[in-house]
Amino acid sequence: MSNIIKLLPDSVANQIAAGEVIQRPASVVKELLENAVDAGASSVDLFVKDAGKTLIQVADNGCGMSALDARMSFERHATSKIEKADDLFAIRTMGFRGEALASIAAIAQVEMKTRLSDEELGTCLKIEGSKVIQEEPCPCQPGTVISVKNLFFNVPARRNFLKSDSVETRHMIEEFTRVALINYDVAFSFVHNNKVVFKLPKSSFKARIVNIFGKSYDQKLLPVEQTTGSLSIKGFIGKPEFAKKTRGEQYFFVNKRFIKHPYLHHAVENAFAELLPSDAYPSYFLDIEIDPSEIDVNIHPTKTEVNFIDARYVYAVMQSAVKQAIGKHSLTPTIDFDVDPAIDALFQTTPKGEVLPPEIQINPDYNPFDQQNGQPKPAAFKPAKRQSEDEWNQLHQPLIEENSEKSILSSGFSNGQKEPSFDPAHRFFQVHHRYILTNVRSGLMIIDQQKAHERILYERFLAKMENNEAPASQQQLFPITIQFSAGDAELIRSMKDSLQKLGFVMEPIGANGFVFQGIPQGMSASETESVIEQILEVQKQRPENMAAGKNTILAKSLASKLSIKAGKKLSHEEMANLFDELFACQLPDVAPDGSPVVSIVPIEELERFLKEKK
Ligand code: ADP
Ligand code: MG
Image (tube, rainbow, N blue to C red; front, side, top):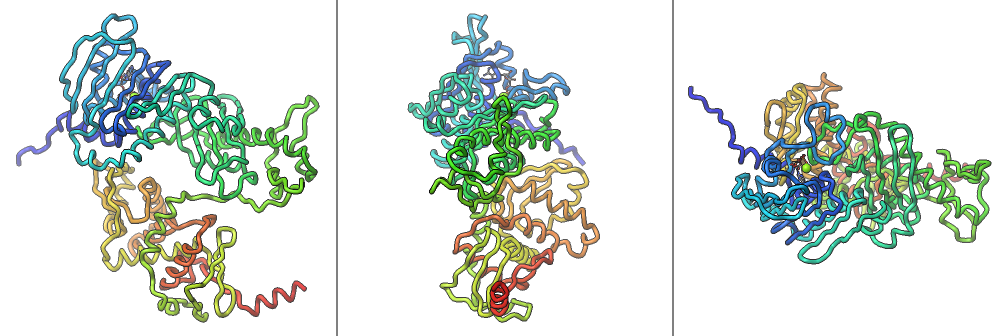
């Protein structure tokens, strides 16, 4: 047999790899701004045309490059930022993989002008689809100007899938904001189609926040500052009374790099605790400085996650820092009116008059912002575990579409109870964002919303796998590649058929990786990895079920992962839909894990209950 394996030409390899780093104009903006900051610029200007589809230009006054470096910078894995593996544990720069410029040059027409400050002439370099088409000395300012034109000009599929200008612009603004917020000692500007979007002078962190989000923020911020050992947390939180009903501005930075961190987010939410109405979100801008050796940098180039080696410690410091900030602030309202002595104790001052941080126990009935009658009133606020609105809507789409037939209501309700009498004006009532109450002929029905949704999803998934129904899959514009350990990859291979019936469209890549081109309807792309991990986890815990109940286990874990959770507020229509769907199930009254979903308190029971109270 003849040999058939060939090495991909660099330009093709670069184009493929570029897909991971550069997904849209905003990715270019992020990479170029980060490079400018890494180059030590004190002033960075972003100039964009047509939402970045025509032009993205970043000009900086940083260190610039020699002619050779300019040329080298476009090579894959060309970086000046790490030299040896050990450097990976001491990274202070934004970039370090040396992939961005090579990726951008593979899928756009790029022009770079760059000059070292002590040279007279700079270099002008033009590259198109990874090919150098011009390279010559040229007069220019010290620093670097990179112009990226006609993004995806040679990848029409990508170009055609870019979203509307307004969507792409929003993404660019978000990336710009993330870099500009924390690099407040650098001046930034952002001009889009000749209109100034931002003009930000070098300033303090607070002034930078105000310059980006508007003057009103001047009154809304509370300073946060806590340093312990090699960890420091500094920045600002929004005063609780200004908390937003939509997800507010939530920015964590680790060593000047924007990150998302649900665990630390929880620490902040927790610190706000009762001071925040359950439907409001706190704003925060928090800069975490930590020894680079205490974080794991070995992460995907475009991921915004960071793993702390000791996350629980960071959590504790974060929570205490935010509490302290709120505690100092809350001192003012408490002197206006009589308060519970327990609250007073929280704000005791030391002999020096210094404010002590409040302890963890906060009186849940105390709400300093409710000042009607000058008396603190019991507040009905409870912090709730939140799920994004989008997530829920996505999950619920099928519920609304697949309107189930009312006649099924009687058939499945299996524990001998009378069928729930249902009419269109049927009312539902949600208790503590957890239980749905409704009136049925025999009394009061209580439904556990999370368990109910698990049951619905479970039966739906099972039906898909067993009836060979066409899987409901959503095609991913940007396929998700996940690398597994050899063992996990094997497990995935063994489940491939079932996974595909659930809506996963997947192909193996490399030794132990899979590319997911489609995922089940109702799941969001960002959940893919965690859903798969959960499935693997369950499979590993119960190897004895592997053969027999493989579908059941898969359906169970996917249902528990994707179900709406306790704590989620539901509209009346959502409750009605959930109710409909639930009673269209074969076993509406037990969850896939065996726990009860529905219970009816008979009317006599209610009577007895009330009588006993008398
Ligand atoms: P990385 O930032 O991960 O090192 P890039 O592909 O973004 O990789 O950049 C490659 C190299 O090009 C950088 O390491 C840096 O030496 C150089 N470089 C890129 N942009 C600039 C700039 N604006 N000013 C000076 N040098 C730059
Ligand atoms: Mg870079």
